[in-house]
Image (cartoon, rainbow, N blue to C red; front, side, top):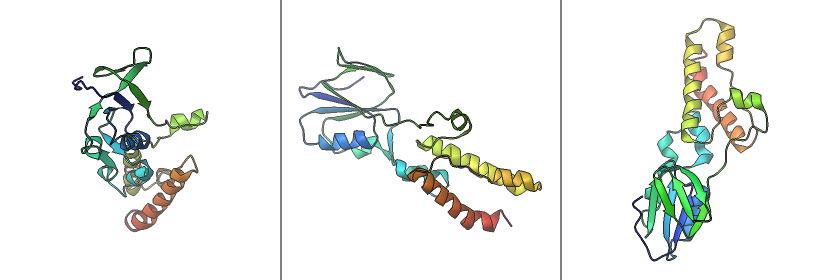
Length: 193
């Protein structure tokens, strides 16, 4: 895996989200070797995903290279990989690029979209936890708007311009507000006339 040997304790962190980054920041003055694994080579600022999905921001505005975040940290190593298994008896992490022994392990892998047992929503919706997912929402929304602009069938147009948000938490509310701004600022002037 090409991680240098060290006399310092090796701390392996799985996940480059807010928790993983905050933990690593607390160790910056400690005499440890830090190895961060993530399946992406960037940190996503998730509170702004709704703006990517509504075309208000480009993805690179909310995605920061993990190596750049920690470039001043001594004894820091990033590995782009997916961790498949952890053996706590052998203190070993098994990843898509090989295995690595650790002295301390932090698992900060974040969360998954919770549909709260509602299979219909799970099967018929697009989650929004990652940049690619936000881009999928943006793409579908813009494609529907373009088709609606070309159609003469008023029922079809209304169906294409109808978006349903499942979830009324902060992200759902922000997404609804951004869609309202999009409708008022762009659609009223360009499409709905």
